[in-house]
Length: 192
Image 1 (cartoon, helix red, strand yellow):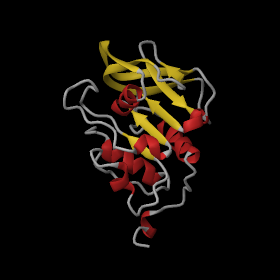
Image 2 (cartoon, helix red, strand yellow):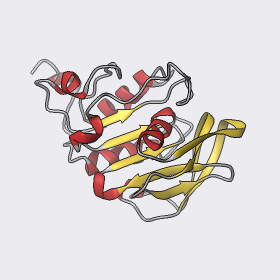
Image 3 (tube, one colour):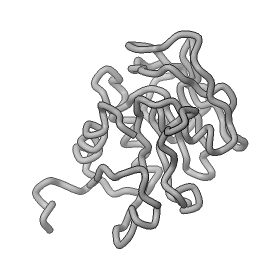
Image 4 (cartoon, helix red, strand yellow):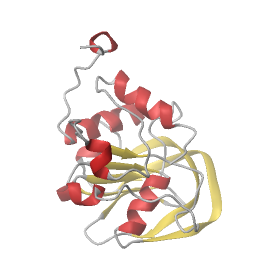
């Protein structure tokens, strides 16, 4: 979705031992997954508001695929909007360091403390959760994470891929485990 961190997300997954690719969100899910064994999808951040006229949407058919999904920033807001929640403009833009507190036990938080540091960069935020979703974490000013464990759909308002979120690699690792990924890919076996 145009995040300045898109390639960093891909890099973090590869560093964790999972092959990852950056794809065009405007393709249909069938085109993205054609002939490729996709185990999970990450919806990145981006500069748009979900309510802009030309705002990018979800790949057609993705939600119906049943595949595990992790939304980050814009990806969280897009999931909330498309699944019947509500996104609103924040009273003030949040850019920089923050702390989030977990509310619910979740496989996404395995190995984390109840409060962790993170990096925020957003102007909109989720105001109302979609049906079936729970608030998983918050900062002093915003919902920081939501999830539906049954559907394996999770979303973060903050950026786990940046070094300013020290627990970010653990969160990404936990998502990969939820998705059933094996952490055994290396750049050496890329050709194979």
